[in-house]
Amino acid sequence: MAVEIKVPPLGESITEAVVGKWNKKPGDAVTADEPLVVLETDKVTIDVPAPSAGSLSSIAFKEGDKVRVGEVLGLLEAGAGAPAAKPAAPAPAAAPAPAAEAPAASDARSTPTARKVAEENRVDISQVKGSGSGGRVHKDDVLGQLNRPATPAAPAQPAGPRPNAAREERVRMTPLRKRVAERLIQAQSTAAMLTTFNEVDMGEVMALRKKYNDKFQQKHGVKLGFMSFFIRASVEALKAFPQINAEIDGEDVIFKHYYDIGVAVSGSRGLVVPVVRNADKQGLAELEKTVGELGTKARTDKLALADLQGGTFTITNGGIFGSMLSTPILNPPQTGILGMHNIVERPVARDGQVVIRPIMYIALTYDHRLVDGREAVQFLVRVKECIEDPERLLLDV
Image (tube, rainbow, N blue to C red; front, side):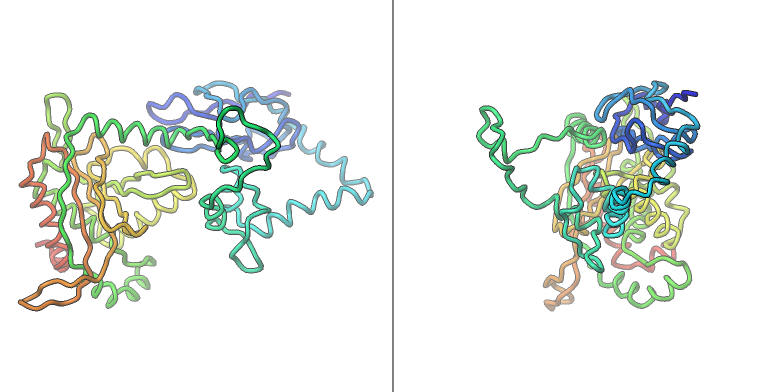
């Protein structure tokens, strides 16, 4: 009996997706709930499972095609999977054995995440040098291969009038990357963006982490990082300057008396901004756990649409990649975004003496239509005060 494989509901306001990858080809046996095809939207990636066991009989859309909710992606012949897998087993011929062993050997020398990244980026994982034990290939090995200059293909196929075509590769933008590009252009063309800067002495927070991190991790099961301090500091500053926790809607201003803080993270398919809900009601341990869980979901393509919606303010940390200074771009319709950067020991003046202190530059990009320079500068000063005197966060003063 033929069973239709349909595009499932994709989330509120999302009506179409792009076929990212078929995990099976026609004729392959499948088990119930086995992921058959990956659908990519401009916000999330969705695995479509097999509705029943059987074999994939036909595919209606190829990779890269756009599909809409409810459309039939392909047909599954229910109940055909189990019999299809058995005929090869009774044959005692030696030939099938190596064919069956090859995937297992490949799996053994690479992690599941590495194989997934390799498949998505069309990388031959057998050509990737592994850094793990026994040469096992990890995700970073595949990403490193992608970042290396491409080796020119053998000049057997001229590529038209473009002299460098053999050294170029044309890849279609993913829906997520297209959406990111659209939102960045939207922010630049609709908001009057301006950025102000300050510097923060991280010495007190670093000393606090060093003193209590072991006990903190033992009690709460998570490390004490910097992000929880900056979320708490941002919430305190947003309470003092509510224009930065607002949005412009036509001729109206919507002030938000809740604090859902977006934290920009690098997912497996690009930049995403999952949201920490009610950050003002969470302690440092809760914030660290929430940020850690959202980061893991982003890296493993497990973010739901609800995880990405409704933020009131955003924090981005370019410092983890080594950035000294940047001007972050607003995440519409928000009116503010805080940029964190790397921590560097710098000579500074303290009490008339030059001393070496761990300094981080911070940046606030804001919508000047709603936020004046005075409020923006004072916002950063408030963040600076909270980080340089972290007891204020704990005592709520």
